[in-house]
Image (tube, rainbow, N blue to C red; front, side, top):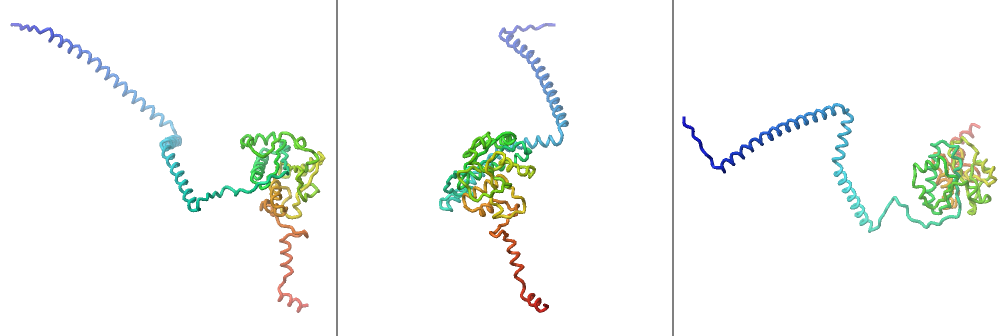
Length: 332
């Protein structure tokens, strides 16, 4: 047999050798890609298996909570947009209302401004009973002091407000519940006892157990209110302390103008507000009925000591039916 030997051009041989090398290099790369794809599929399958296992471990309540949280996050921008729209709507309503009123801005929340004339009268809340109260009663006292401060700030004749012997449970409650108390204005807060802050001869302790009745207020005096919420567990303690310190004491003229169903012991803020009302109105009767809550069952007392209800009852008894009176005379 004849063998045909073809001698190729050197350039053609070079091309064939390069093609052969590329084929050889592509084979391992293809094999690596196949191995990588298989590994990725295995990882995906394992990841899906872990997620499925995790979903099985999560309780129905937790799943609902996660879905709710996810929905909350997704709707964040929507809520923001709604708030913005509501704000713009309220602004438009205010502008329209202002135009209807002829440009006059009305705000029902704000009280009309009045000419305020500060009083030289001093009112002191004695907070030295801290160790005699439970924490719930201390918190009630805290709220009453807050009320005193607020009413004094908006009063027509604000008094010189003093808070003495501040410490213990009361200060702790104020620090926890009302951290802004350190920024209160127009109030004198003292850690010392009131007897160390003011002259003894100028002090008058207001207590319902005192036999002395306060007819008028002396602006040179400092009137002390016992900061105690004890539900009558310590009856007469403020009166006894006033006598022990040798200072003057008196009670508000409550019995002269008011008859109540309960005891004459009033809350700290009630005493405080009554004095503010008296300074504004100049009448104890008006001050009492302006401040006293309805649950006290307060009834007005006339100068002869009888209440309005008693007088109405006497009048109704004296007015009898004429026919009945005639029949009675005939029987006689």
